[in-house]
Length: 119
Image (tube, rainbow, N blue to C red; front, side):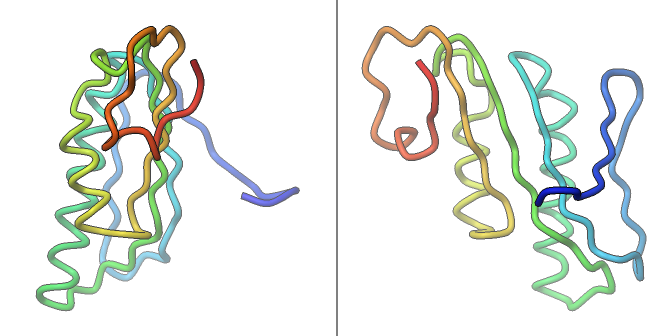
């Protein structure tokens, strides 16, 4: 986003991301804390499926980028972290993530270090 950009926020409740073929592409920012990643991870998997389908078969979905911000006390509480890193690797520039840890006392593994903020 840039200054004066319009954004829409949704907190809690039933929510989903279901772009239709022909819709204008949208860029998503997903923000999760702890186990709140569960529904957002499902959305992330759906987007990855659409990206894969789009690349493989040239479907009509026009997808933007996805940026996930995910916070937990430490890296051991970051659920699905290996899956998320795999999605980032599979779709570089299309799916990105920034993990934030608030109470990490041990060394952070090299694989996560480039994506970790906080402490």
